[in-house]
Amino acid sequence: MNILHISASVKTSGAAAGIILMGMAQESIILVPAAEADLPAMLSLFDDYAQRQLMLPRTEADLRANMGNFIVAKSAEGVFVGAAALRPFGEGYYEVRSLAVARGFINAGVGSRLVEALLAKARALEPPARCVFALTKRPNLFRRLGFRLAYRERFPAKIWADCRQCPKYELCDETAVEYRLDQ
Image (cartoon, rainbow, N blue to C red; front, side):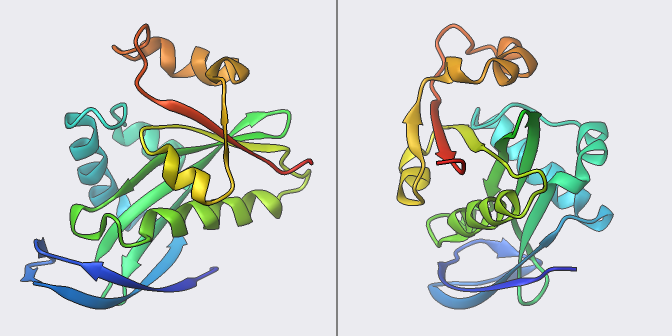
């Protein structure tokens, strides 16, 4: 199992595993492949994001079927703080999907570290990935990591698979970004 350690300054002001943390805390964040035990926390976080219309809903069956695409972020104490997936779309195209970070850890670098880990995973693939893309409400996060703005029409498989089912399809409020690995 690959484990990445990240040191991040984290603002926490909510309940985390029954403990209330206040103010600035130095947390060691560990990134690991998602496991069956992470499923309840992933569902809870993704449901929260879906209710706030930050992502499309994810079902337990879908998460189980795609568990191998996910990495999760946990505190040194094992508290789940975020997740993201690298979804294959064929022909060397991969999507950063279901990027979500627990409220107490937003703007602490966890999302960036998850995306960086997915980019590293994409670089290591055989055959090599050509492009990693995302549809996001946080394009600046991706741009800081070297992604460029793109037209969402460049990703017709994504639009056909997911976007056409979205209630915001005609008035999409997400920005397409891409990271070319083949240039």
